[in-house]
Length: 220
Image 1 (tube, rainbow, N blue to C red):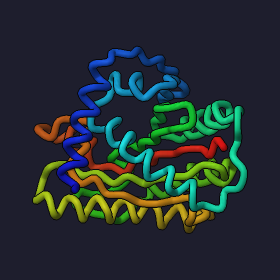
Image 2 (cartoon, one colour):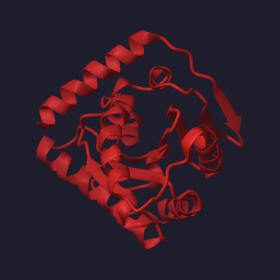
Image 3 (tube, helix red, strand yellow):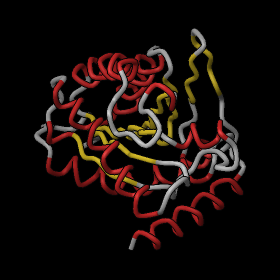
């Protein structure tokens, strides 16, 4: 099943990259916010695996939204609701936010602030960033969150899968500890299957050791 998901990630990533939809970027205090409103556009300038992982995770988010005690949806104002979250999250140092749908955000932290090599223990710097993100999530309670764990290709596939799950779980646990309703959050590990950079270089491997947060608002 995991191999099938990875194959799907590659196929979706290639298809999105081929679509060639432009992305508009805004710079704010050295932090980048992608203002594109479509999944296709979000693939431009990002590795196929990253956005494909977001597409795969959207189905999981729908399950979270169906079961979470979020209450009534936002309705026609969902776009503005996500705009406000996007702007606030983008102000957090070391954080990049990609708009991958009208009510879907992908939040990525600089890889070197999260974990040491082969570790699932959050660094002090990452705790500070997650504290700021938690404050935004508390302010916008109608958003479901998936912590998506990833690794580089060093080590065995089985080891990397388990490590990615532990990293995602560590972030989820931390967010719950900061006041986020546990019903709003789930954690998934993608192992080494969704790289955003080449694993052939040290900098590429560092970028691939990460936990992204995929957010979706309840529209209805």
